[in-house]
Length: 185
Image (cartoon, rainbow, N blue to C red):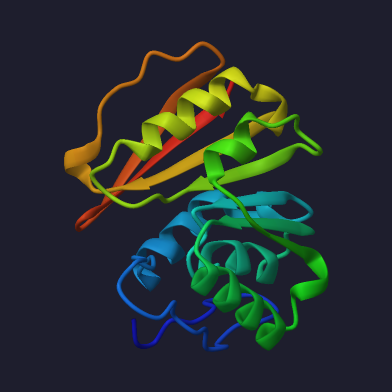
């Protein structure tokens, strides 16, 4: 995607590399700006988990805007290399951790820290977002008190989920992208 960049914060205006090929679907600037307008100042001093991270654009934006830590998870070697390059390029590598692992395997493991925000943007039309939400609902210790889980999907993929420890509190649509917000009970 041409023009992928950091929108605001310490790395504002810095260009990011895209993952080679068509295996990822980077978030548009409009959607990313809207997402961080919703989060607002609460991003300051937060921890951020970027699942199915792709380019790392969302987690990098969080760090640029004041998050103190971001973990990036992806299975693809090209994505991991791209995230690493992007973090070094914008000078935020020291606030991050990059792990090449299956997101579901990671979420099923024993949590080693709690996150204030978890961003879930898996490949489309495979119900992977549902699986991630159900695992987080079961393994809630990944989430800090009042943590948000934010899902990026195509609107056609959406369905209401029956959850025990998470509840949906908002949705925002930006063209062919739907952001669904969940809060820890």
